[in-house]
Length: 601
Image (cartoon, rainbow, N blue to C red; front, side, top):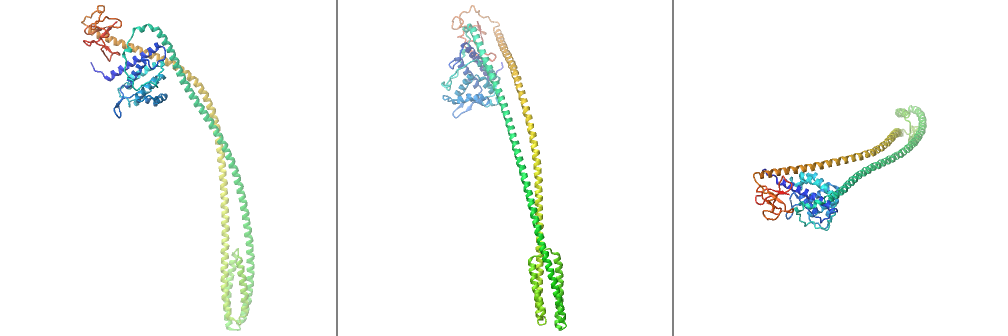
């Protein structure tokens, strides 16, 4: 025969033991007829079996002093996967009497049973096998299909009401030993089937009502959450509308402010333009007045030059008369004539330059007066030329110097006139630039006003869109209410279908279990027939006493036939049991030949 995996045998034995403990706990609780406390033996055995199942395949963790195996690690992981388990974990950590992780795990199992959510918590843990691989080996019960089967069996414990006191109980030092004698059948309990059926029906109704209440609470909580989300969305939309209205009001106020500012800027620019126009007109009038004064000065200077020319002509006539008197005087007069001609040429040039000049300063007028005085002195000197010819040359040199100074003054006046013209041009250019800048500002303000009008139009369009959106959302809320009703109807149908599926699955499981038991029984009978071929057994009527202890057979001491040697033993003499992979229960064997024993009723 092929050797089977010992870990698979261990998983099968633990699964069978869990089935027996859960079934015995449910049956005893139904017959007991009240809530269970911590001293109830089947409940204690159930916790022991669950502890063994959770310890199977647990990885060894090295501690400071020794190796340690604890189931608190994977149970503590449930807190992260199932938010409702946070209360259990927090209460377990706050218990004052617990010092070891194993004690915390035992307290956690008891609290989960009282909450009737042990199956839910362990189902969340089994689904996350990648997280369980940190605590369990790959061949552990919680990592294989047997763990899922145990979780499915734990759902049946929801029919039990447990009232356990965890605070004062010493959970750290308990020894978990499985008592197999509790799961042996007793024929005395057959008479109380009717009472058990009634109690089970009442408890089934109670559990059904509890499940309905739980499902209704979950649906109500989900609907409340959806209503809260819809209310929040509606409040958000109302807030957004209020914010949009406030923004529109602010924009309107800003628009009015900008319009008022624009009007003020236009008024200021108009006043500024009027002021600049007045300044320009005043400057033009001053320029005209200064020009008239310069023209008058120019006419006076021209008149004075004519007088001087006439005086010079008189002097020339007198000089010509005196030249005839003396040769030296003639030579001097010739020189004077040459000088006078040169001076006349210079005066003609001055006249031409004075025609082109538009403005002459007061200094020119003063210098002209000085030149008149000098000419008067020259006339006196010319009258005295007969006596002082030598002084004439000196006076002529002085006149030449004074004429040069007059030319310099004339050049300075021309420069000042050009500077004045340049300043007027600069002022006019700056005024033109300011006018152009103001025009640009006006154009920019007009564009800003256009943009603000477009922006206001866009905001009004957005406001209308928001109104349409709000109406659309109201229609959607109405549709959601109708969808809620449809969803509730679909939930009712889904519940009914789930109930049908659960009933069908339970029926299929029971049929599969019965078929497996029938197959095992058939195989046992076949093996027994093969072993009994060619042998003659002692008849049951003839065998009245056990072969070993020689006690008489009864209901408590039943007969057991050996398949090999055909001997008959009682229960006490046939206590040797071996676990078989094909059988869900341990099998009794013969003491002498170690063959299988068959129980006879």
